[in-house]
Length: 472
Ligand code: UDP
Ligand code: UDP
Image (tube, rainbow, N blue to C red; front, top):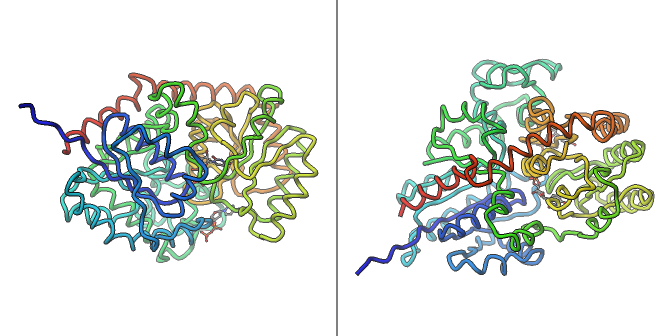
């Protein structure tokens, strides 16, 4: 009698914030499509929000091998609005260690055959090694920022960190592959501190180095976009799978009907779809979409500068202002109401947008973004040029690549001035429109190719799936 094969069972453990939860859920669904069983670890609060705001349960129900596993309440997941809060989240995740271990050894019926863990959670590596389960790391950031994080100790050794002097335009020499264009100001924002013994720097540096212990590394990018940097990364991590852009990869592998439901499916906030109707009434490529993602905060003054810059540009805009995103909270809602009133003629505001659908809309011609990696990839895929106003962490380096390497936008980093914003918007939407649209179109084509049958991300995902199948 033929022996029944047991499908591999992967435990997926994302860092509990929007960009990570969404991306790793997309990876989970890709695995389910391939017949792999998935247990997806999620915090209570994120689970509640996901179920409330999306159709995720009905969408995932066709996959009998998929299940959510809610983490203990001790794992807090309040909004991570600064690096400090991000650090608090990392700390609180460690409290899940015992729970995680019990989960790994308690699955007698369906043993876990592989763990896919968000980078920087090295306690998962400890447990994987202890119990003998292979661990694959998934970094949801860009390859260029991962590589810069990895090289931070080298920068310290070479005396390039702490940063020297006030001239932030000085080039950094010790991130291989970026010698000609990486400036002090482009390094991850945590490099801007003078005391490198601080806990954030030490933790990120040493945790990033732990990646060498993982069996493999998954990156949400594609070869044609970050090839030269990936060659550098592979000198340290030969087993690196690039399988992105994941949001598009999943759509490409689903049938049309399910794919059309996907655009609005993984948000932790309620999406205001009224903006799509508003976009329907705007001319082709006439609107600049403005959003700073799920974490970034702006001050009242910055908000006002953006508003003046946008209004003075004369260009139409769709602006996402999360209710919790203005640092001076009391002023936040007041100023938002005021802006909303004053904006009516040429603008539209929402608290949270169906971003993928917005970027895919024909009325959108540009994106004023904080350069979060997901937003960057979503924009790249739709061929939408960007104005980058990086907020923190990896965003500083993403914006340098957008402006200087891929040439699909302008990097206004470290400036929040109405005149600069007005000029950048006019440049992107009018003066230099053709140039940006042309390069954005070219890269978008490569992105599509990468997730289509036979493309690099498509083949790498198949290879990853085959490798996981062998881990049973
Ligand atoms: N997003 C969205 N609606 C919004 C703003 C953002 O759906 O109004 C989504 C966006 O599509 C992206 C994610 O939130 O997938 C933000 O991730 P990113 O890595 O860009 O930034 P982060 O929020 O991690 O800073
Ligand atoms: N940052 C920025 N624009 C802002 C706020 C912050 O470019 O409006 C950058 C800033 O350069 C800083 C980094 O983001 O180095 C981290 O900022 P944050 O206020 O989050 O500081 P932290 O919480 O890490 O001390």
